[in-house]
Length: 331
Ligand SMILES: Nc1ncnc2c1ncn2[C@@H]1O[C@H](COP(=O)(O)OP(=O)(O)OP(=O)(O)O)[C@@H](O)[C@H]1O
Image (cartoon, rainbow, N blue to C red; front, top):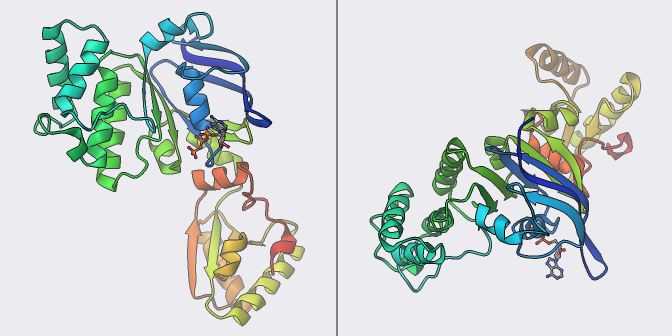
């Protein structure tokens, strides 16, 4: 059996009456990327704060880096690094000074501290900017400096709380490379993100947190298999054509059995879109097009949609009902 870098059982946390984590179990094997996904306010940051000893859970057994978090938080702290929404970067001093400060905090001898700082600044493309105040850094540079500072202590487990929120596409990809490199070096990464493509791209396993509980957990592929197959979207510009198509599809649904045709969720309705389940193969598309033709349905645009993590996310988290749209929703 692989060793677990993080193991949590029955994690609970409430703020007053509000239950934020309601019995969460997590198991993160060493040397892997685990992504915790959830809508805003789902409790991702709370989970990170608990696992990284910043706040206490109300209940639950937690082991991080092989140490019992309640019994030995110091040992956990020594094994982990945390970066994210609560950045440690001090803007008033230079990138290099920030790094040296971390080296001091970790009690590295002066010479070793300088060497480690220089190596990490180089590795994160910050050598040129090293002597400039961190306040002059771009968002991407600040995040890189933040991670570099976290690595000074040589943590085996890193918590990255929404590491790419607000970054431009190039900086996001740079951050992804950094995460891959960390894992290649044997580090375990616990990543929270709002971006499903990020979890899809990086994570070995993904857990979807909703309403205080893990709604689903697995590889990206496993999660995608949880939601119904792909669909074809038809977009209309003429409301009358849209209505006609919707009722024809509803009739066909009745003929074909429940759930075989459905409209999209409310925003799709507003944008005059209809969704029809389809695997997207040429054969299926051809027969769909023939059927639309025979029914006299003229859509403005047809797009083929294969299930992705967005579908999983909307299906599993509160308010998301795309895959389970009742037939009556076809208007
Ligand atoms: N110190 C606190 N006191 C009271 N409520 C809190 C506190 N910290 C967080 N909460 C509440 O707990 C819930 C979960 O917050 P948390 O920050 O963990 O969510 P999140 O999933 O990280 O969300 P986001 O993606 O928006 O950062 C929210 O409803 C939040 O308002």
